[in-house]
Length: 211
Ligand SMILES: Nc1ncnc2c1ncn2[C@@H]1O[C@H](COP(=O)(O)OP(=O)(O)O)[C@@H](O)[C@H]1O
Ligand SMILES: [Mg+2]
Image 1 (cartoon, rainbow, N blue to C red):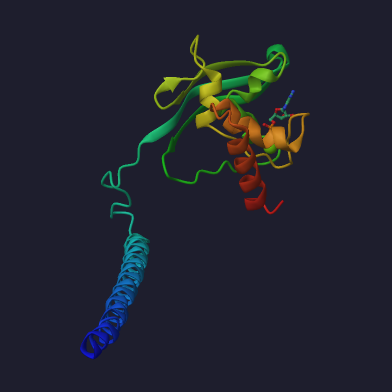
Image 2: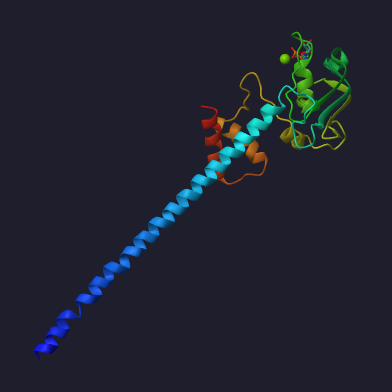
């Protein structure tokens, strides 16, 4: 009897010791995997930073040297807007604002129109996305090609043109609707319909504009 009792007493002690032993490696493994994830994340961020720095360095290396290519197409930039012999008249042809304009606008470049007040800068700019269509009595001749298509061709989709050629005005220029509807107008016309998506887009846009 005594021997049996001793056996029963000593038996439960063993699994207790085992439990603590099993638990330890699991905690260690968990720490190891957390460390691994953090390490991978750190490595990714480091690689991203390196890529960014390499891009900046490449850009700086080409600056001031017009012979060196600046983009993937071997330095050759495509003409995306081409103006051919363009004339523009207000007041049913009585007032000519633009005279035989010829110019190329290339991709990924900043192009400026410089000239005295009233020389026609805004008229030409507004013509490129056909905003002047809205001016009563305006007439034009010649061509403006955007991505090789004449924007005055019969049947040309003006709404699509305005998704490619946007305008930012000197003064705030909202439609006579709420600020929300003004900001949502763009994504809405691009087919975004979900209210929560529009809400998010409007909020992001206003926050980015510090409004
Ligand atoms: N809606 C309009 N109706 C009649 N004439 C206009 C109209 N808008 C501009 N003009 C005239 O067309 C010429 C070019 O104007 P504009 O394109 O605004 O010049 P800029 O932007 O270089 O100051 C100016 O003589 C101007 O008075
Ligand atoms: Mg102007």
